Length: 259
Ligand SMILES: Nc1ncnc2c1ncn2[C@@H]1O[C@H](COP(=O)(O)OP(=O)(O)O)[C@@H](O)[C@H]1O
Ligand SMILES: [Mg+2]
Image 1 (cartoon, helix red, strand yellow):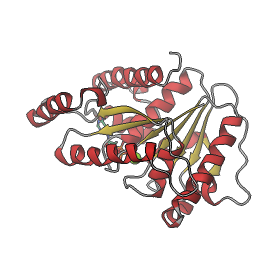
Image 2: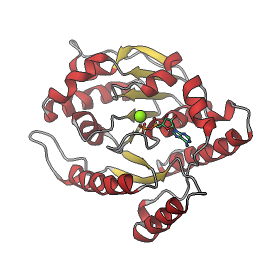
Image 3: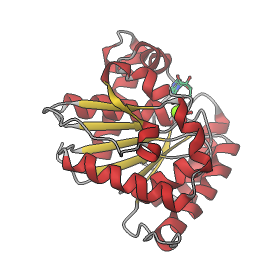
Image 4: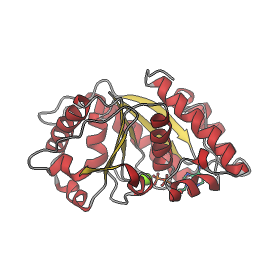
């Protein structure tokens, strides 16, 4: 099982949009997909509500006894939904959060899921940090605006710390791979965004996903309707469908899974 976290401590940059489209695409490919929603805003849980399982996200950290996972069938999506218990996560010491999370991941792996996708809250807290310690891959949607670009530098530093630094009693996550920054909500009619993209490409060519997701209403509509954008019929949605499908293929290939 491969584990991917959508991470950017800035909100509104397209993390959840990317993550739920990965989940829909992987499901359509017949993979067994688990989605863990660690954001108390519960946006992924809203869009993927039809896939909600009995276990909720706070059970990972506070479940007593630890949660038992239902064995999935082929081509299954299991949502481990955000719940109000997650508000206590920020009070949990990081080493304990990481070891609880690692134990749950081990159990999910035992259920023969192919992929576990983790959506995170927009803050550099215990939720995001512990997710970075249990994941194999990080994908970071960004907006092509100054605040977003500023924020990504801090995230890159955090990722390199997670690879090297031992939290008391916890091994560093030496194998954590950065899949890249995914320019999202891109408006090519805005010269500022075009300029920022060019600057990012010049400064961090190896850290940018060589694709982007345009600003398109179809995506917001899809997220609100609980369906992938490729099921929405409009011209803008067709473009968004091509972009999100290309993104999913890129992610799958770069996680070493067959497409
Ligand atoms: N490519 C896009 N085009 C238009 N709107 C988008 C796009 N991606 C996300 N949105 C909208 O922008 C808002 C923030 O996106 P979201 O994925 O929730 O960001 P995050 O998870 O990083 O906070 C949501 O209202 C969502 O519907
Ligand atoms: Mg979100």
